[in-house]
Image (cartoon, rainbow, N blue to C red):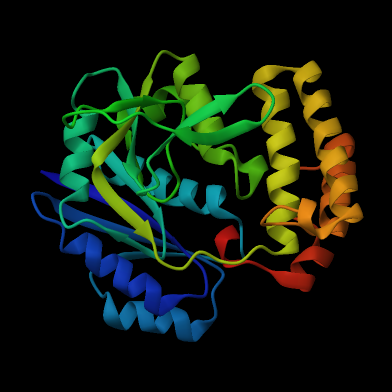
Length: 296
């Protein structure tokens, strides 16, 4: 069986080459790879072309964000691979188990109403959608066997989508730019009657998790509140906005009250931009202050 993997890349060509190699070496499936480049410099593109001559390299002129870049690859797959039922999406720096894609497909084919299937990142959790906090993970109970586990949305490190599901619900909502787009996709899929599952026997690791930056804090805060507003309603979004404002105040009072990602200016800007209705790319001033590869 043949499948396609859409790899979203930005300015990490050597990691991307290794990721492509890991997907091309998958056991039990034949793999086509579409690399979508988010405005990387010429040397990165030349390295990918030289080391991965058999992949389809789709070059975007700027950093459009993870969701929009993935959409470009997904659209190319929908138009150019009509014989393939499943497509997979990942960032440029992952290490999947040697048979991860085959196991993901087996989980996805467990039932015809499964539209999205997620790999296991090894944290013993499952993805849930909370009406106030949006997409989050909670500990999952130990489960015997390898049957798929129901979740609310796929994990962005590696997931698969059925063609019929994407044709039904559409692609990523590009207003998010990066962060929360997977939770939104899962919510829309479930709203149309599709199931989302976690394949606990299909492992993947994200090898180079970027440290928190102003861009990350901004996008996570803004997008979470907008996600809650779209899928839970205005009341829940207002409560989530107030919680975020309270967390900002607590973080300013004491360092021990700050989370892993905390940048006061970026967080305040996110809260203001929620009120203004701003979507899409983060403000240029935050990008200059610390752009992040995770927002590829």
